[in-house]
Image 1 (cartoon, rainbow over the protein chains, first blue to last red):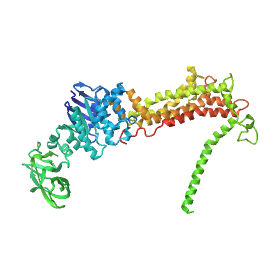
Image 2 (cartoon, each protein chain N blue to C red; image 1 turned 180 degrees about the vertical axis):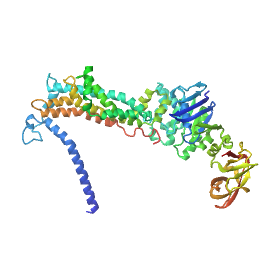
Image 3 (tube, one colour; image 1 turned 60 degrees about the vertical axis):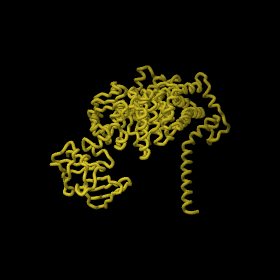
Length: 346
Length: 285
């Protein structure tokens, strides 16, 4: 059992606070993704769990044990770094076996323990190579192997895919998730990429400016964002928003062009006066009534067509069926699924 | 011949001319020393000067390796021992102090930079400024004319310089690699031993070479802090050869060449270990 929890963790670098009252709990075996823009404190949070940074205040528990004052080698966590952080002067086999070598295991032992990991990650043929002789994807695989072979209680990933090209990133995403399912270890995964967060996580922790903003399953976060920041961060294309105000069941845009539309029912926090309307691109559609906009660009992708419209200076995207037609520059009217739109106070 | 090839010919003439001048300028004195050390004593006093010896003799070298009491050989061999002990010990101690210090300076992200600069400033001071204080300190410790005293002085000179060099060697090792080692369960000592130092090896070897050279060639302090064969180093001893009533140029040339040999040998050996691009591939470049 290795539940990981951070209890009221604060961290400042000098006078600069980087984490404010962070409370996070990852259940045993859970794949928890910390996501947020750069500088939101997600990596620092991970490094505090790893023991590479110490919390200014608060405690860290792994498997119910207080590890706040333990060093990084004593927590039985394994970490995969963004830049791979392989030992360049050691072969793949030596990289993977380094931890065991430090614990004075015999060479034969190390080879026996490394073999299944190498097999699992397809590194068998590369064991005698040096990191400089490997491609980016292979290096990252070695870094994962080094983490895996230690049979840790907890896996920590710090943006492991951000140095790979798009195609490889997609493959590795699947691979890491499948691997985690197979070994069943509690995993904390840091990324700034919302697609990675959505596709890999059991639960997502959204962070912004050193604080936890929302915790929930990917779909919860996507459909019920607690504020504009979360709403704007997820989805591809991302959420649309338009300024205006709401009252008596309707939302009226701030300018003259847009007009009036029925206010969304799903909005848990109706704003009496100022605010903005957020609508997800796939749940907006063309209609006879609704907000008036102008088509700026049409992006046909085959499966669907993305319509980039302009409404009172805001960019507004719609995801329509692949055969949808609209002429550039033509005026359209857009209606939202009231269950999938939100009004947030300004 | 077209104008273009003509220009190219001129360019190569200039290039090779410059290279030849450089080689002559740096190697001629050495070549001359070799000639002088191998010439019979008579050749060195004739006029006009003979560049090519009338016959090759090794008597100067033989003299330097004869360990008779009060002979030039005795002085030279004692000095060779003293120089070796002083240079190697001072360099080893300096590295032992400077490498952990450099690590701390680099990994504390600039918190100790002012300290490093202050220490470096002492290194910029002319030797003569430190002479009197050092003399009094050594004298009160009873370490004048003592190898330990000289080692202490050289450490004081070498530590700032070695620390400075070592900081850039260690800064070149990405700290993510060190973090990975810590996550793998390495103690601080293991991390330095298995990861940081092997990766900084090339630059640290160069630093060590410079440190040894500096201690090996140092003349000023050695001259003033030592007074007999028990502590005199090679540069001082060679100077003594020139100080008698009749200067034996052949002997001076031979001892000078022999003195230059160990550092040259070390440099050649280190050259092999200075493998380039050692850190390539560990992290995304």
